[in-house]
Structures are given as C-alpha cells and as structure tokens.
Image (cartoon, rainbow over all chains, first blue to last red; front, side):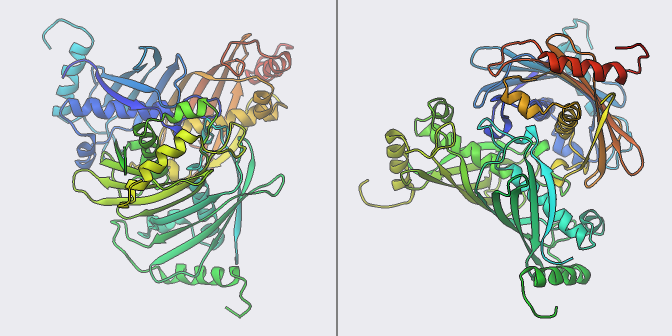
Length: 145
Length: 145
Length: 145
Length: 145
C-alpha cells in the first residue's frame, strides 16, 4: 500500500459538546483510528507490534479545525506516513465529511519508537521499510525507493 | 475514616454533549474519582494497590440520572463502601450539585479483586479490614465494629 | 425491522485504560452507537429527531461486564427496543467479540422523551409505533402485533 | 490577574491508556480546564460568556508531550493568554507534575470568537481589555500597557 489510507467513522453523540459540534479532543482519537488502519493496510497490526514490545508513544500533535463536524456525520480519516527516522515516526491526517467532501480538519503526529518501558528503541527493520515505501510514494516522488 | 467520603469536581467542557448537559458516560469517570478518593481516605492508594498487584476491575455498574449537570457546575461526589465479600467489592455513589444541594445522580459499582493478569484473588487482609470498618459505620449500624 | 439491530465497532486505543482493557465507560458510548443504529434501521435518524425537537435523555443505565475487551477487538453491538411507555423508552444491548463470539457485556438504558428544554413530552406517534413493532417481535412474542 | 494562572488536576483512571500513561487526548481537556480557570481568574466565567452569546471555538491546537503522566499524578496546568486580535484568541499551557516539578507537556490553542451559530464576531470590549492586560504583563513586557 502506498500513499494515504482512508477509514470512515461516524461522529458519536458522546463525542459532541455543548457547542453542538464534535469536541476538538475527539479528533485525536480519530487520528489514532486512521493511524492504526494505515499500519494495518501496510501489513502491520499495531496491537501485534505492542505485543512484540514495540510502542509508538505520541511526542507531538498539531491540528487545524477547518469546519465543525456534527453528530452522526460520516467522516473520512485519511492517514499517511512521512519518511521515518531511525526512531521517529510522523503521520499526517485529513478529516473530510463524506457527504459533501468538506475538509473538516487536518493534522499530524510525531511518535517515538520505544520498548514497553518507554525506553527509546530502533524501529524494527520491517516497519521501517514499509513506512519508507508508503511515504516515498505517498509524497508523490517518482524516484525508485 | 468511616461512612462516605466526598470529592469535588467541576464539569468540564469536554464532558458535555450537544444536549447541553454532562454526558452520562462522564459520571462513570466521576464515580471512579470518588472511589479512588474514598480508598485514599481509608489509607489506601489505588495506584499503590495496582503497583502491588491488586486490581479492582468493574463487574457491574448502575446509575440513575436525576437532574442534568451543566458545564462548570461544581459537583460533590460522595462514595461509600459496602461490606466486602472475599473477592467482591461494592461501592455506592451520590452526585450532588454544590451550589444548591440538588441530587444529580446516584449509582453503584461492583468489582472483582484480581491480580495483574485478571485472575481472581483474595482481597488483601488490610484492604478487607478497612473496607469492613468503613462499611460498618457507613451503613449506620450502631454496634462496635 | 424487528428485534435487535447489530453494529460493529473496533476498540480504539483511546478507549483502553492502564489495566490494558477497554475502560468501562467506553461501553456507554458503544451502547449509544447501537441505539442510534437501531433507530436508523427503524427508519428514524436520531439527529433528525433532535432537529425536530425530540430528545431522549438517559434516565438510567445498567451494565454487566462479562469479559474484558481489548484494543483492536472487533465488537458487535446488538441493540433492541423494549415496548415503550408514553414518555419512556427502554433499550437493551449485548456486546459480543466478533472473532470468537464471546459475550463481553450486556446492559440497558431507559430514556425520557423531552423537548429541547428538557420538558417531558409524548413520544411522537410514528416513533411510538415503530418501537412497538420492533419490540413486539424483538421480545419473541408469538402473537400478531 | 496578570500572567499565567494555575489549576491543579489529578490524572483519572479513565484518562489512562494501555501504555499505562495518560492518553494524549486527555491533555486537551486539561488545557480546557486551565483556560476556563484563567478566564475565571480574569473575572470572566466562560459559562456566562456562552450564555451571553460569546463562544470561543478552537481553531488550532499544538502540543508537545515531554514526559509521561501517570494515573493519580497531581498535575499543575498553567494557562496564559497571548495578546488577542479582534476576533482571535491564543492561549499557552504548561503541564507540570506537582510532586517533582517535571515538565510533562506544553501546548497552545487558538480560538475564534463567534456567536451561538458559529458566525465570527468581535470580542466583547471587556474581554479584549482583560486579555490584553493579562497578556501584556504575562509576556514580561516592561512598558505600560
């Protein structure tokens, strides 16, 4: 799989707030859904990664909220990997309303690669290679990577 | 400490929903706050209990929502222990609005006592004794306990 | 549609807790997903209902947690309506792990029917009729309903 | 009140995840707590602001997670306002562990000022003036503001 991978969610009632829209913290849970599905599409279960002792704790997050999302909206979460460092990962996300294509939000996260005790570790070679492949084409580069 | 122990929280914006009130799932997090503070008042840190291998997973929960709670409301969470079984715990909760004394909700939870792998275990004797003491007087019984 | 309606969700990372399982409050959000999908299957969008001034605030909830659910588990949420009163609704839920059929949790909620200001109101006739139809057969009764 | 305003929270069990630490989305709810308490310290109840038709929806958020926060940790949330634009607000946050002073996270949010329907509006003069006063000194500037 190359480029971005899309998942679809529906805004839950519990995710709304008294402004009548999806609360901004909900987007971080949706990014996470997108990231997990991206990894799955790349042949990696994040659950299995953790079971094997590889953890990707979040180091940084940024998000721009473009338009509100409403209860029961169907949202497409697109997630893509950037070219990873040895022990750093970076993912990008776009949230789009399915029914009208409105861009709802966009954001990114960076992650360390650690063991179960939070100690930094190298990315497993297989993970590194698959993310590189995905990122290379995801960024629209034409060179053989 | 005997009887119930009270904690105070303020309803967070993130805890509201599009009905303009605190979402009903928020109450379970508040009960949990009340339970942790009750244990602390009884001389037991739940964090330390888990660190020592004693876990209290929730088996059942019940809650009646009496009146809505609103963003920024100050709420008092009263938690009390019932007399524990060997490997069963039961707590009761009342949520009251501080400013006017309105009963907002009441509920209860039952818990197993397990090890870190979810295997049932006996309650440590110290925990059992303190919960029994608290429960005995909490239930308004007059006998010496 | 009669009887129960099933939805499928995957346990999100954000829904887990330090015990390594889905936090018990997550189930209330899942019940809500199941309820919304049940209404949709019965031809009613809960979003549209609220837009038309009909709200179903939760009055009571009960849940038994049978087995833990883990991150990335696929869960089936089955929701069914009970025969409604004039201004009272009651739904039942079962949460089952898709891969092995394990019963993870079961629960119920009761709801008032109110206007946007929380004032009790009658259930709209259409809603009442559809819930009655669904409940009649959902409860396995043999009589013509 | 000038400069930053501090609030204290305790990490709730419901806020942890299977990595054994506070989930990163929890920080946005804590920032919100800090922002509400900052406004309160400046003489403005955000609840009253919303009741009077002034809303501050989040436009952007950024956060760097420096060290994990654990269940039951006492955290200090420091929030400060930056000098506001006519219809833009920006707040900064630092999250510090109370017991050892560790910097856990830092972040910021930007907000629009809107009416109840999400239409952009000017900041009320009183709000503007108080945020300017707070920001001026909060940024350590020596000039009379």
